[in-house]
Image (cartoon, rainbow, N blue to C red):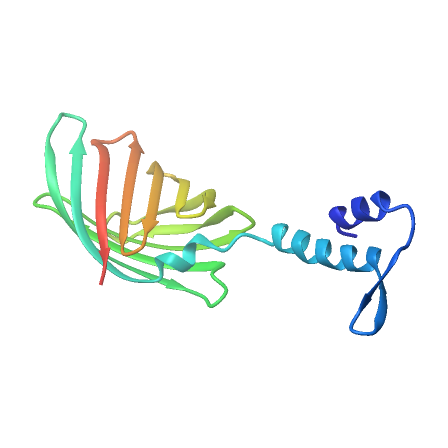
Length: 181
């Protein structure tokens, strides 16, 4: 039973009737019904942040190396999202003068948690992805045998920002700004 409804039942010691369109309806039943609806909406599962990501995106950013160098990146991304928004398939390709990466992942969203798998074709790397998602923001950790990184992604309307902080290796960070196509 809805916790708000239980409180409403406890707060009304007697059943008083009110007239509505010629029929008697106990006040408690009215209160119970209205609070059940309101409480049910408040307790509903949050909408998946994957829904706002669906579609094709393009843009660029900066890849920073551990020796202080920076390279401009050009990127394309495609997000395929199932109807309910709890499954996401990502394909992201970025290139600079010296680097290219081709990332694919399949991710599941359940009650604020995300989990999935990723592969990077040009380096033959793969691993798992896990983290949290709420509203327009995703925070995740990608882990594999030869690569690990922390990821932060924010989608607002037709703009998306992505920050990747790898651990180990010669890449210090990747920052992207993508626009919906």
